[in-house]
Each structure stands twice: as C-alpha cells, then as structure tokens.
Image (cartoon, rainbow, N blue to C red; front, top):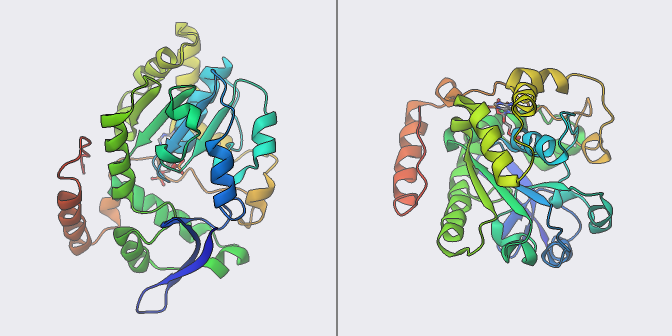
Length: 299
Ligand code: A3P
C-alpha cells in the first residue's frame, strides 16, 4: 500500500505525497491508493460513461465542462468535477447516467473495461511549459494550513521536482510516453485526443468534434451555446458565483474554491521562465520526446 514520502531540495523546500508502486499521488487521493486503484480497475463501466483524462493543468476543467454539457445535452455548468481519484467507489457506482469522470491518472490505471474499449475517453494535452507555469502558480495559491503542512516550495524548487518527476502524478514526460504506448497498442476506438492550444484557437470546431465522438446532438444552436458557455471568460465568471463547495476542497482551500481560472492563455510561461530554465527545459524535452508521436509548440 501507499507510503507517505517527502521529497526535498538542498534548500529545505519539500513536498509530502503518497507513493505507491513507484508513482507519486496527492495526499487527498483516496485511502492507501492500492485499494482504490484495485476498485477502479474492477469498476463496472457503462456504455455512456466518459473519462476525461489529463495531466494536471492541461485543461481538465475546460474539457470536462464541454463533455459534460454535450453528454447531458444541456448547457448547465457542472460545478465540481467528479474525480475518480478522490471519490469513493460507492459514490461513483451510484451516480446516475450519463456519468462523466475526470482523472489525472494515466490510461493504464483506468477500469479494465475501458481498456477493453467500453465507455469513452477524452484526453487533453498542453504545452508543458504552460502546464508547469499554471501548476506552480496554482500551488502557490493553495494557502490553507492543511496544504502548508504538505507543500513548501518556490518556483525554483517546484521546477526541480517537476523536471525530475518527483511530483504528484509523476513526470509530465512519463505521462506523455504512457500515451505514446496507448496510441501504439490500444485496439479500441474509444479515445479522443485533444490539444489545449488547438481548442483555444478554434473552440467551436472542437465542440463539434467532441459531439461527433460522443455520438450526441450536433444541432448547430446547441453546439453554439456550449461553445459560448465554455469560453475562458464565461467559465471564469461562472466560477466566481456562489456554489456549494465539495468537502474535499473545503479541507484544502481558504475560500473553499479552487483557483482554476487564472489566465487561460497560450505562452504565459514566457512571463515566468528564466532563459536558463527555458534552455534546460528544451534540452530535457528534446531528449525525452525524441521518440514521441506528440509534438508541442512553445509559442
Ligand atoms: P492557466 O493557469 O494557465 O490560466 P486544469 O483544469 O487541468 O486544472 O487546467 C487549468 C488551466 O486551464 C488554467 O490555466 C485555466 O485558466 C485553464 N482554463 C480553464 N478553462 C479554460 C477555458 N475555457 N479556456 C482556456 N483555458 C482554460
């Protein structure tokens, strides 16, 4: 079962996480990790289940919101996401159809039935320099006492942990490599791959693409309404409204809501990376991604 581990840099900055089977998980991942992973593996998947799978800060909330609206054929915002990672199996099993789940885990940890082709998977990728920027600035805002016990990092220390993969959900590079393997080996046609930057440039087309993939209404007026509701501005506005926060976020956030909607732009990393960090990142990227079928533009 999971052990509690602490990673440190030589200046005393640290992160405390759960570690199981060689991978790091956030502390609020359910229980000892092992049992929940086993329950997920054995989960009863329904034909109209959809799994939104992503590395943190790649556009999970955005993609989930679009998928949720399309699947439910209504333009109501979902509020908190239903994460496989932080929700017990009884609750997941009892949710009404159509169910939409989010997870930051990789494909190999999804339910067996999904890996056999049942249900649908939507995965979204984002330029990793923006992923890192978004993640570090997000972590900085998690200023609840509970969080401070587990995370004491700076931009520099977080960069070190991110680059060598000593971070919850593991290295971004390993995450992408795991998807390369899926692309090569998965036999089903139940996966849709999305790129954050492409969605940002032409959201309407991607809403349509997703509607086709999910096999739901492609009526023009409905797709226009979903597109409008899912612009950054409209989602960010919605997130400022009153809502009932889930217990899980009450425990980690001072004002009980997650600071997800920051800028929603492409290339904000340029305002934060030093030249040396960017060069180092490029070096590591070139080496680790040399056999990858995915390419990212550092615009
Ligand atoms: P930034 O921090 O760069 O603004 P996740 O949902 O995986 O945690 O990702 C959060 C990132 O997605 C944040 O990036 C957030 O602003 C961005 N995001 C959320 N909704 C978006 C939208 N509708 N359009 C573009 N970006 C969005």
